[in-house]
Length: 375
View 1 (spheres, rainbow, N blue to C red):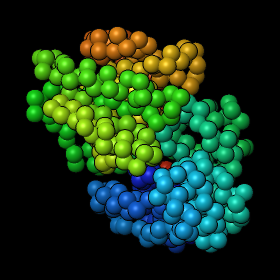
View 2 (view 1 turned 45 degrees about the vertical axis):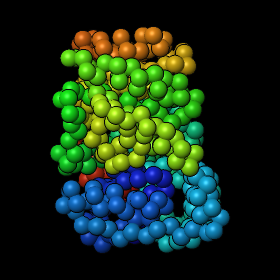
View 3 (view 1 turned 120 degrees about the vertical axis):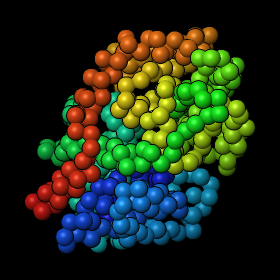
């Protein structure tokens, strides 16, 4: 059996799929090859497997035409991704299965992918509409994190008959091995809050409230009960601008303020596992943070009418700030109010992932092999 794993976006994908690829490669008579688009991807794959004491797998960079390289240089990553897939259909048609963790890989069949089974290994978690979700039915097999995610896609008619398999969240297997690799410590010894805004323009809080938030934290850092702050936006926020956004944000770093625009700690749960408080908007990293129930604050500078909207169900797990004047007072009171939300957080997390947090990588490999051998 020949299986291709494709990493067609930033290296955050590695932390969702690398352990499943390794589990498949350990099965006799199974050949796994990993294809990647971003040159940093192999570094992350090696880092993951080193922590887990797993052997490296064969890897190949996606060949790219001059046009594709030009799109990458211009940071037109969505267009580049589509063209990379189109240019490599012939190569991928050599396999029995192609496994991706991006909805956008669903276009492969329309581009001419005929021989392999197309498999989606979900990342993030259900609860918010994403523009490429309409491509989910193009996949022959969809591996899901839990019953809540399965119900979400079924309610929208996105799962073909019997195409979904619940396996859990493979990223937790990575976290279990890497959790002690990188401890975050500030000189003042205070706890830190994580600000994790999403990149989606219509929903992100970053464009309106990131600077006031940093200024607010800077003013309270030296108080006895003050928080330090880690600013770690969604990595796609820095797609465009040729590095201007990163450099401007980095200038905000100082005592008690850590700004991260691209380190592995943004991707491997270093911050979500250690933060005392989560501050965000619509990033699915809230699911990872709630593996250990802790206070959350959600920012709504755009006055989105979120109540009773199933896409914002996780905003019921902490206080929501609609007015900037309430921003820092809400953050200061979050720990005291956490008891109001903890039962809902625990229920929410269990519904999303079940009770067996570890072992999703092996369950995923087993589900894939059962499907391929039965096809």
